[in-house]
Length: 106
Image 1 (spheres, one colour):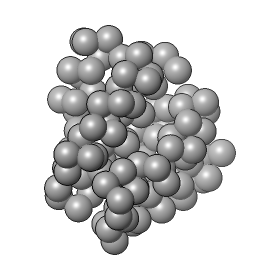
Image 2 (cartoon, rainbow, N blue to C red):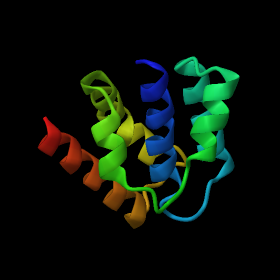
Image 3 (cartoon, rainbow, N blue to C red):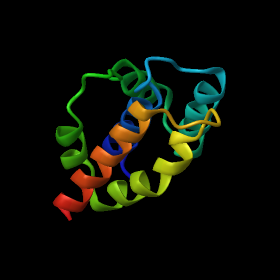
Image 4 (tube, helix red, strand yellow):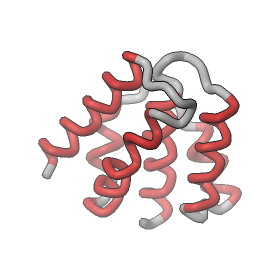
């Protein structure tokens, strides 16, 4: 993934994590581990985290992801949703919306 994909990926994962309006310690640790795993530079990390919002348009971000970025996102969704050991209704709704948008975009 390129720089843009890495930032969008983190923003979309974070959007799932904060869908229940709470970012637990486990979810925070999980997000930090993904930042490290995907090799975000300090500047990319700042930009990604600065762009996290529950109200951000999912479709716009998903459209901006490359096909490889979309695939990586879909592959990560279940782990993301269960990062704190439970999947809330709001998290499930966001995950399903992301999956539907990715399927629609092909």
